Length: 468
Image (cartoon, rainbow, N blue to C red; front, side, top):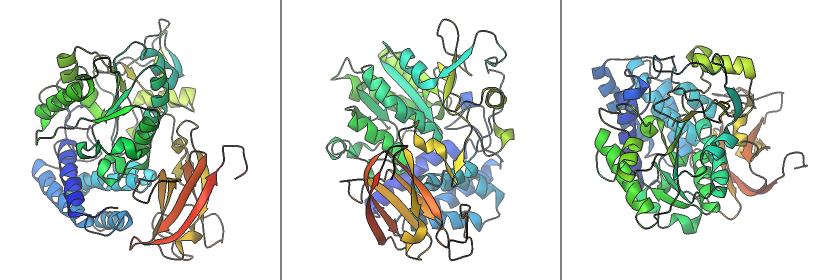
């Protein structure tokens, strides 16, 4: 990871904006309709305790970023959490930790660190299982059909659970085939937009959440498919409604000013895409966008009907659909007219149900991205007996500065199971892990805690069913 002063300041500033919006004011309160950035996570603390916890979290994250390399930063963050028994601190800091866990490929740990209870609410539509006329269909097919003739499609995500990025990655090709030509994301850094298209891949400076491989893959896929990639985050220090308004105006200017016929795909967090109701005491980015452009976006809600770390945290509709239908791909419900079902009928056009999470070697199989990627076995032997170590795979021809296609951390230490080691199946001192990669050639390497490359190898990943 680039550890320049500029980069560290940028990450810290971005983290502060996101954490204050997503963690501080909401760690305790509020319904989704008037949320800051996300609904309330498990647990609570008073406002004074939250502020102290945010200050401490910012301090720790700043200290982490002074470490050399992502692995050392992650371990520092992980240990800071493990060594504290302060409840208020953990309620806030677990979201910071979850970001790092996604960046290093510990998706199970990230979901467990920041799992959001999704209770049934008074403004929920009736369950599609209990109302006659609703039938489940592939989310990919339905969204592509609904997007026909639309000028904009907005997807949302849970920043701590990249499962909610996987469908968006899959949709980019289908939407490109429908004529969509511009991709915008709130996490992108305006300063990198000139260099990004020619480079073709994300680096540390590309964005905050794009440090995570699935989000980086989203950008990679958009560039490969020929999308024009746009950053629209507020460049001022605006917060709340003012930030939402500035984001919408940035989209209008940078997407449509010189491309009146542009067709736009947006990836944003949580309720930034809601089309009705108060948001931060004002309006959401999507509401501002529709008001100033006259464009009604297709809004795809992906953060509510997902699996959680505990079954009791799942929305009751989600649990019922999983037990009744057991889908193996993201689904939505439609009626006989082809109209989509939405959990929040006024706020979003369509709600996505994601399948139950299935683990393979302690990593979720949704990393397959709907069949785009396959598992590739790697041995901890490449760590050269230096633990923990981080294994990464980058597309052939991309430098070490590129965000990898996938990465994971090996915690195994000798014959004693280390922190998080749940994959050892035999007496073999070198357990097997799996990276999830598209078929093709990659440069794979292993880094130690000093950010030194201890192993490097070119690999070829075969399509499913073919010998590696």
